[in-house]
Length: 241
Image (tube, rainbow, N blue to C red; front, side, top):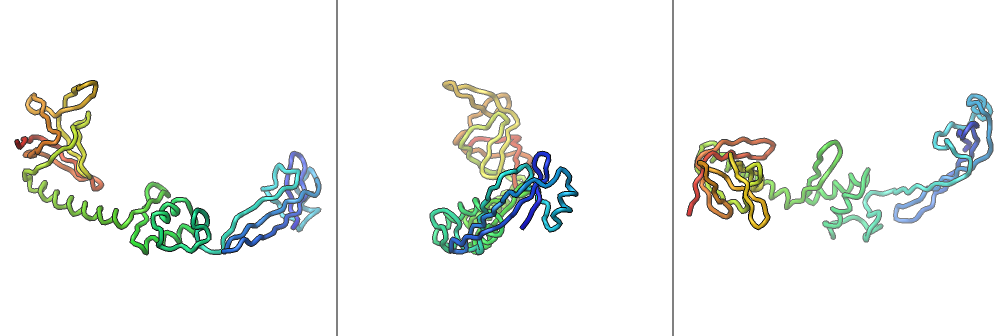
């Protein structure tokens, strides 16, 4: 097939041909040979008029020497295309590896693997414009349990009931401690140092309170829910001894 390119000042004439090499297992290489023939003309319309059967090919722009390119193609979507299971049919033998593999592929092949994983109980989620991630059956079950726990907790908060909580860490500089999807926020904290390490303690009635690993009873608070995150503003509490 004849084609016309452009290099420097001249429009150029090329012969383009393809060869398909079958590698087996639905896998092939298509090799494109771009053979330079000659310069035609400075003028585009003149070049096209001389070779009316030739197409104008932008990929030839800037070239004056022959070269070849190779494209990998697959005729199937249900086999591994690389890695330790290359050419093997995708199955549920090694699901952890399949999840890793899913993150490395795209296009119709990824759509097939996504469908296969969904059949195993996985869920494909999207964040941002086109970023995807996998939720395993275990992830989904943990999410379900957390939602149930959150709903029960919100019922307690709605009734303004006292509740207990044990913090395994001190609050940060914003007075916040997070446990799962709940952010507990103390109104005031004070900066402290111990052996060169910085930490914060909540302040109640002008006095610092040590709360780490202690059983707190939250007696007065406000709360809000945003995007499944519960923020509890602690107004008052006591420590069970």
